[in-house]
Image (cartoon, rainbow, N blue to C red; front, side, top):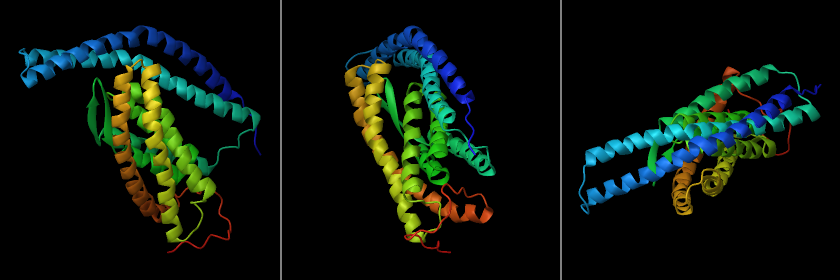
Length: 314
């Protein structure tokens, strides 16, 4: 029996209004200052590059110290606007979920929900670790992109927990990774895209092919790879495209730099996608029987007979 609740809707709406006001304020104050600092930083980098090539002479140590100081200053000025945008995206999600709870209703919490929440927290932590500690940065002007391991656990979360919980785990873990590193301005975009990756992987794996039900080992392997690939194909297309418009229109990055970043992002995202499909599939196929034996496996879709299903190979 579902009960209509309005608490989440009220919280989401209030948070939406506050975060929107804060986003406008921080953009017009600290973020504009960060852009001015970014211009100075670009000039310093150009001077350093010219000296290293031997075209001009100068004090490299002093310029590098100035570069480091300006980088730290730029990052600290970017944080308030990035935080407010991230909260704004979260508020939109809460408001949408709140409208659903108010119109359709919500069921009482069960042991399965507690199991999902616990595993979602663990997978969010793994997403953070995979990005924050297993990445290779690629500088593009004053911006940067990266090869990283975070998407592996975003996909794995959706395979294990379904699109909603898996998407949230990936979005939260990777967003925290951005907010605590030099990728702070990418945090709002990361939250949106990682949530979408989880929803797509969960849709293919569980809504269409009922992956959590009993199937043959061959079926499970095939659907695991297919669902993982679906989420990563979306990311290969969406990450550079959304990133380009996000950088230009929300962050005010010059078009040539946004374009260069999108091109480089296509390369890093494609490599990250291949790594994610391979390792997420391996991890899921290894964890599935172990979690079933321990009673920790989350049954995303109810077990039932189907013409295409066969008993899972033991």
